[in-house]
Image 1 (tube, rainbow, N blue to C red):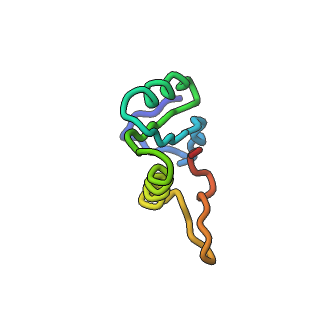
Image 2: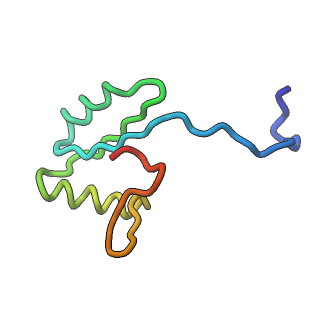
Length: 88
């Protein structure tokens, strides 16, 4: 039975997110992001980060983005993606 927002709930349990998130770092601002967004569907979310340049610049910006957003953890001088992070 559905409760009103102001009514207390018997449990705080919620369903786990079932949507997969893919973060893609694109070289340009237009064609790549448009192309990759075609693959979005129910259960799949595409986040295209535009204008990331090419080669080493792209890699450096991707790593910086992941560090700033808590997607990378550092341990014993090694970097790795955190568990349950988006697909990068």
